[in-house]
Image (cartoon, rainbow, N blue to C red; front, side, top):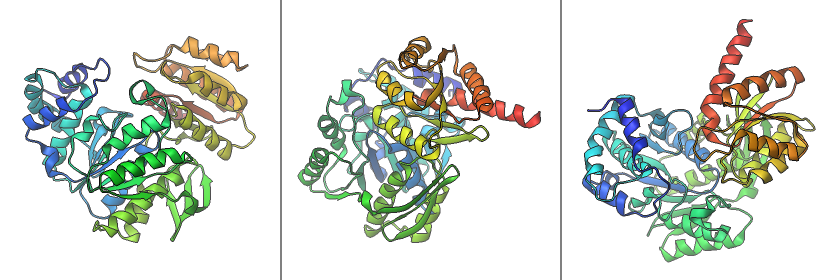
Length: 432
């Protein structure tokens, strides 16, 4: 049997040469390992932004309601084992090694070998089955219709959190095309929940797909959100009849994500899932999620937000201006070269005091020098660094000296290095 590091090396070595759309490989791999997904009940979640926060909050609510939950998310933010969790705890190194050792010969026996994401999906299904999960919150990768998670039978509920343009090379150039791809998770007889948005044509596509599959369709009423109070220590709000709710998650978009979770919970309990008002309140209050307007330090305030597309950056920018009105900020940033980084920098320029750029640890990353040039073209003094550790250290010292907040933006691939450095700087500061 492989050990944990050998299992990780094998998983990362498997045909990760770009996306290979299609369900044939995952269907064959699942069949070879006994179709573990067929014995599980799923809530299947797709969408451009907000999937992770939604999944984390809904899982916390179901766990507070007494359910043994599974949670599958991607990409991982700090360590690989986060991608598959049972009742809030990541898979252990030993369990991952054992299950990967079992799945490996089945994968290698296939003529068309699975991609990394397909392999991880199959490993997760087997893990959740072995753990006896009652309900699994299953987040898609980047798509829907041809995403490997779509091998499941009709779930309890199919959720599409929202639609905007991202991964256009795979999903289409317009919101309508992307909506059609993500609506591909809708299966006959399931409940469908759409998170809502300004584009009525997108909702019409999802609603029509639900009708075609004989599904009940529900849309989140974002106008029922009221009395929102945002502080750097958390957020309180009312949603319809649900009063004085609190979440730890920061960001002015998180109450909207919470409204989607509350709507899902209300629908689920009418369908027989046992969720009380107390467990809803407790689950929301206890939910945590890394990398989305996450406060990592105070004095100076250091915040990480993995905004990596235009809509995500709009939400991050709106939150920054809400928490720190009329205040300049320091920015550490790294992006993938296939993102709309020039437009994102243009959005940030009016509030950016100084930028510190670094390349995330990914072959698709834009060089720190190129990103620094973009900031400079918008009149922002920017320094390029060879690592996120060095960029974070310099930026932290600058923000502390200037008395301004520090934000790390652009890619979740930078999270681990940035957080580790900030934690070390905090320890050093506290021991001085």
